[in-house]
Image 1: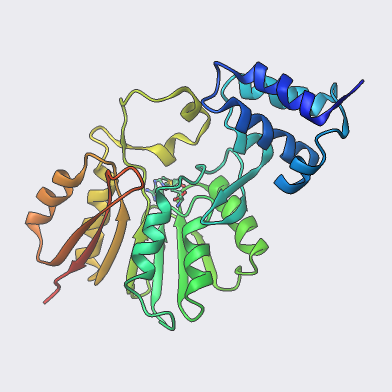
Image 2: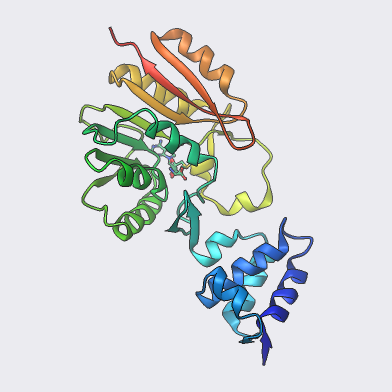
Length: 277
Ligand SMILES: C[S@@+](CC[C@H](N)C(=O)[O-])C[C@H]1O[C@@H](n2cnc3c(N)ncnc32)[C@H](O)[C@@H]1O
């Protein structure tokens, strides 16, 4: 049986009400992805007849009601105004990570030939965005998860960047011998026992949890910065980790340390210029 698009939109909105935060918007996104159409189509085809009992659509609605993130159902995620492939093998990119891109781009010349290394590449969004803006830089992007690396590979190929972003599997910098000019990372930084929202249970746990306190991987990365004499490190962190980072860096020589905020004005990351003299 078919139903007009606007009626189906209302039906799905009702089904998602009380389950997701923005049911009307999510019903729209779900229908657009299901139809493979954009927002303009959605607005201009409100009376279009749509098959309402298609098993794929019904399955998506059921899974969304069970809190499976919309991005994992549609295999689409938008980040920094671009669209990326995503699946359960990688963390769903968060809007706050856009600040990390801006912080890097405001400090690096567009024609830089730096070697930039990302630890924890996940879906690939950070390295891909930076590679698009920094056409002469060399990129090495590491992840410990082969599933995340296959998502990153798919995205870097879609952006025509597979030649420029070298993907490697390993623990932090263990697989990187090269001299590093800039290290970037959005590492896992949530404490192992932190209470989480339901939808986070569908995301890879090694992308979320950073250890008993939460900042363990950040600290290991800071150790690497000094062992490997990396001059610049831009890193995302938890909103409550500023003091921890500050305290840990008392053990090291720092040229400058700046913190940046996210869209909600929470502390979200830092830029470290290390002093290796
Ligand atoms: C928070 S996610 C970030 C993903 C992506 N860069 C983003 O910003 O959306 C952290 C990533 O670090 C990876 N990871 C966790 N522990 C790691 C380790 N010891 N070495 C390398 N990568 C690690 C996870 O597999 C995950 O893909």
